[in-house]
Length: 568
Image (cartoon, rainbow, N blue to C red; front, side, top):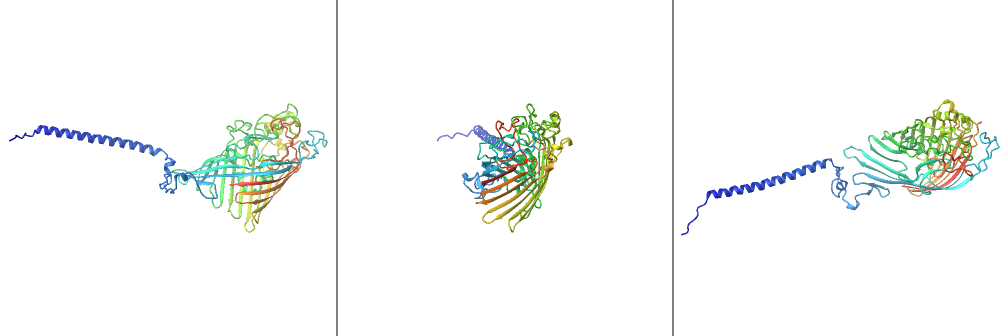
């Protein structure tokens, strides 16, 4: 029978040991792989903690929003980016619980206005010729038709919740003025130059900021100051010839509204409402290296005050009061200023009463150009030896304060309101006879809603007496003191509202200038203004330092405008 081989205990043991070694290698390999995987996971997790989640991952149909923890609506991916909040609005919800709104105002009118100089003869003028003998302007004066773009703009504004900051939102706005009837470019007339480019991006109110409903809003950018905004509700003639800005906030009577202008490089605070009451304050640093505010602010293209150095016709030329070789320094000396502060408080119960008070100040306002080419006894024409001394004296603080009250009669659809304003200029007593910037002003208006979506408005503005006059008018009468130089503007308009966006309007306005005063029509938003300035042959039209802008005081300026407005 066959023999059976006996088992070798040593061989079996060696085989078992090898098998255990192989298993240990496999286990070790698995442990190493698991450790490497865990290490990679930990590294990824640490990076994830400091990274902001991508917006595309935070907004998927049927998932939870990583920003808010709320469930997202189950919509198609193609509809995720923008959703309209209402069918009748241009406001959209954003994926991350924010929002964006497109808004704008389109306003175009056909005008016919007169500067009141047709056939005008200088009654008394001791600076240009013998009193009573010098003929008036010989230009295209009287009535002139025009097509105007008025307070037209388009903008985007939005908000975005700030992660981890309770009830806090990031706010932003980009707004651009639009020139519908002219080609966009730098502003220029025969009496003023500006480097501001109409129609370029963000030429109007634009900012970024942070805010909450409990603590209010802080914004940085450029905007109209609280002083001006607080009384917008009193002006149903905004953007028209008879706007209340013709007189209110306008210290000089020309087209610039000194206390109603866009404030650049500014920071401001807007409070929440407490029992119908709110508060706002703005500060704009002058950013001016010149001690007399004569330089352009650092980072800006214009002087504070809205023009460029040399604007306003400050040198001699054909038709100018200034003799040859007599000129002013080429600086921001026609209203340039340093630091500005503005504030307002408003009570509005939304049904009957609207009450407001405001204050604004401009530091170091340079009006040295008032002494060049003027008929005032202190001016360079009459006293050339003193022009340099007086030039440096005419630098001081200008301020304005006002109160306003409006009552809304709900039963009749009638609004009645008024504003009282006091403007001041602090200068050396020796040159007070040149001070045309200090006066009182009043504005009263009535708004009446009529059947069939119609409305009629009436307004009256009065510019009070001043301590003196700079004497820059070509027909300046030195025998008339500031007390006799006042102005009254009367205006009426009618509006028909076609739908919530489209309306038509007509406006008639007239400004009666008394004594040496020279207030205009259209200041503060109307594209084509009508003022004291005339033209004549061979006078430069640039508005620069040698333009001789031909301003005439004591005129009766009037005009009518018919326009169409679309708001969204």
